[in-house]
Image (cartoon, rainbow over all chains, first blue to last red; front, side, top):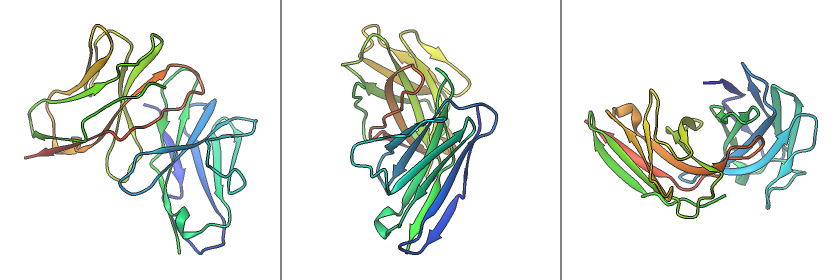
Length: 114
Length: 111
């Protein structure tokens, strides 16, 4: 299957700072990338959908000014958590899809805000 | 997307077949059945998908009932590494369509 990477795999930051998470499709061009969040013992929750070169579409309840998504190329999307707070601590997962092919997920990024 | 119903948890002995059921009684004609799994603290892994015919790949088999209202994922010889949360998702196979995850089934394989 296709390979999607995320960086960093783990990050600890102080409350009030911003954190950027990168998602890359390594061996294919992703027309669409998705960002999910997963709290402990819960399922994945879709945060937003991003298409290359256009603004992301956010799910209801997700603050677009807090979770900035940039999809600058067909192989890279970034999620920036601005002014992070302890309640933003979570497992963030991206996925990438190409045309009608299946979605492939990254390994996830564990964010801890202290 | 149509909703799916899965048992919360299942147990399976190593080496035996694991049969994971999923109900999707409101599935639409153009929606596919997808299965993904998530091993602890990792991203979900694609397993298999189908529309109405039974499907098999190197990981698993997917059996879809004739009325398409339910399906079963079969892991023919479960191993300890198959312990994971398994998600059954129905989705239109269209570019830009996200996967919406339910609660899934926690499969525990023991020796």
